[in-house]
Length: 435
Image 1 (cartoon, helix red, strand yellow):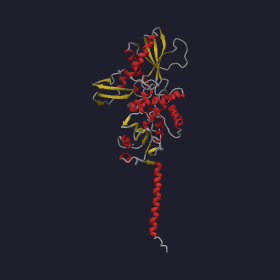
Image 2 (cartoon, rainbow, N blue to C red):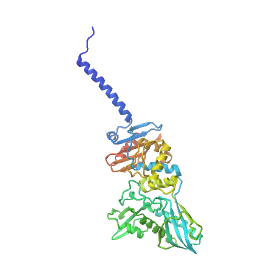
Image 3 (tube, rainbow, N blue to C red):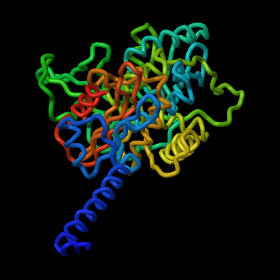
Image 4 (cartoon, one colour):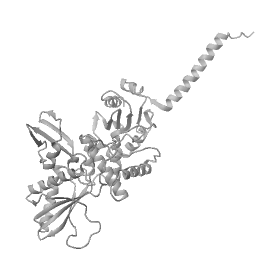
């Protein structure tokens, strides 16, 4: 005789079976979204509760060690600079050097106008000017030119009035506008001594245009060197170019060259005749720093100016004509689709200032896989963690490599919500200790 199972017991068994199915379905669903195998620390546990966050870490065989929402799109902030660096290195090579050309025009006997044609050199800093002027002086003497009656600046390599997406109107250095001709990242470092405003850099003189900009500073930082502040040169492109010409003139006079205080802002004629005013190429200066030596400090200090200059120069070289923001977006779309096969993403500036940019953690890891030959250019932010960080209000990102005995393990962490201060570094440290 077979005993019937009581109804309440059937209900219990049925409920347990349903719960088991739901649990399995939940696990399967979670496994499709998460993979957490080796991390159990408090920072990872906190990260796993975040709704607007994605993560991917690969092993040496390109298999996921940890992942969360790795295909979801987020604002990448300054981890965009990894893409800019990769595209620049892939196109030019790490030994590439940016150039600036110098022409002579309106020559009369030993006098002429010196024309500077800029090509967006992102690292024309004060330390570079003596090297530039030394080469310039040699060529002027060889041509028998002893007097410069004016300095003419040709900035036509970039679109006039160019401002990249995400750039604000503050005086912070990260809001410096790009320029085909620019000195010291289009910024100035000022020291206040009593009522006097001085250059805070021994290698940089205070010029009239520099003083005009310095007088706009309302708040100085108190340091052991005194009251100092670094600001950008503002959105006045004419003032920025005048500042460059004043620096160039000062360094030329330091080497005994005779230069009048006259500045002309106009491009060289596109069609050139062979008359007396025909511009003659005098000297091409190649920056003493290689592309790798430009990218390394860009990564360490997250220099937006350098990143956008690289992006603009690349776009102009590949598409021709003057550099524009629209060309940057087109070039990034084309190259990233070509290199990685991406179909969905959006990048519109080289620095990562734009909140319209969208990438997935898996895409940043794609870039890191290709960036391995240049991993040495990334700063070590924690022991055995070499990475580029990104920060905007409500955005915290980090992408790079964990270094262990197996080699470099690429990872990308993207958080688009508020988290505790330095959380990404704490999580990166936890990662390094676990792997």
